[in-house]
Image (tube, rainbow, N blue to C red; front, side, top):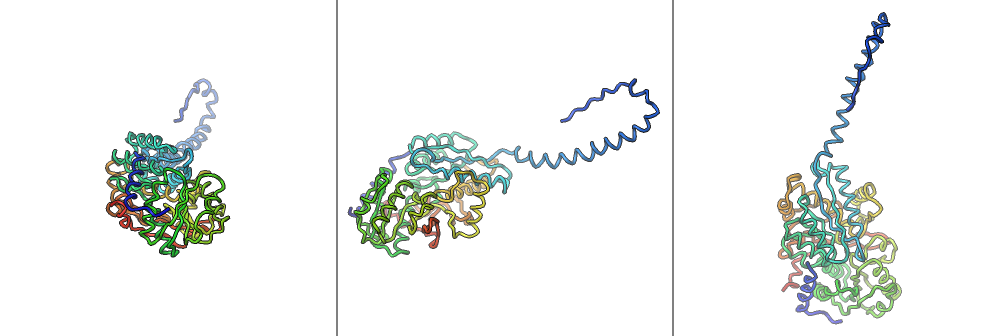
Length: 443
């Protein structure tokens, strides 16, 4: 397939936009029973006094006060709530998002006193593939007066539809930024480079670090992904890479056939696929064909099970967040400690795990900067619009707003990992992206 002309780029983007939218005591002794042994009375009084006084005065009161106050004080404070739209149902499911987010909420409550002494509470709204479920979650949080920040884990057009509702209602939205509109809609902010960033990082990295000049593009035969083909061609060309063919891949377990038809003389093959099963089938196909060039895949291929299987060994994958890599040092060791201590069976160290933990850090910051118990939707959104931080564990420096007109691009540095022996390594680290270089897509 030949490269797409710039005039088709905006059309494709517009098509993507259109998918939117106490104790008691009794004394009952009778006088006749107690008076008969009168001579013994002097012996009884000294025996009773030393036993009663130490038990009642020094033992009971000091023991109760220090135990009651620390246990009751945090429970009496109102929780600060964080909303989470979690895409955990049907085909496109990311169970690591609510699992990791809850682990970090529990971590902050246990080791950092929640947020200014208030316990944090995660309120999860589960959604599926259909945009209607994401719209329902957005409306649920819009109508919740005690929720002023929402972590939005929707995928593709789902994030734009739900994010637009939250933005219009003035609720702080921490999105995944899957669509171009997520970066161009007022009051929408994203702490990952999302689709625009990933679309660019493939080519910035392949050209600058791997000397790739020609490439084959493999796309999932999915209507949610296909509209971005022209943008991929244009961004590749702007980075000195020519994509000279597109091959659409289905969801059958053996993809050797269509993959074998690709041009093996190209410097690199780029796979933009929909889920782990399709990524595994594609990787097996590429291995069968014996392609020896540079192999790249999108972040959906970096699920923990796929990585650990070893099928992607040698591949380069951009991560929308910070994934705990095996060579990450003290920060990554701390991430793994928190997940091991507070995480449940659904916790993963791949996929969107790094993104989820960072969003909890950011949401907690915003609630405190927005006034804590006195925070409002407006004050939290104001805090978000000028938010910046450089010490989130394993995360790049982030700041809002992004470069004009990409105001929602608060993170412009994806982590580029290389899979080796079934583990994610980061020899190349974060790749800085200049979003302004994508302005030509809008003209």
